[in-house]
Image (cartoon, rainbow, N blue to C red; front, side, top):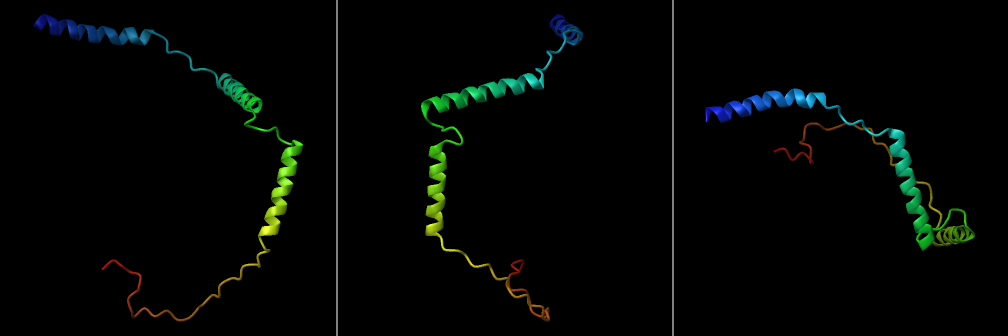
Length: 105
């Protein structure tokens, strides 16, 4: 049993220098990650355009739909009057009575 414990302890002592000798893997460069993500996003958008899920920006259909929506929203919503500011009351404060919203009791 003592022999087994001695082997384990010596193994632990020798493992640490062995792990220190192996170089850590270099992290990928940020520019490479950005270009990879950009390429994946571009491929995703192209697939969505091909399947008809997305429409290119600035198409005639988009402009017509935007104009139609603007006309409908202008016809539905009446113009709103400017909001009036609530009056500011600056009077004496009565501190002799308890505050009605104080629930600490």
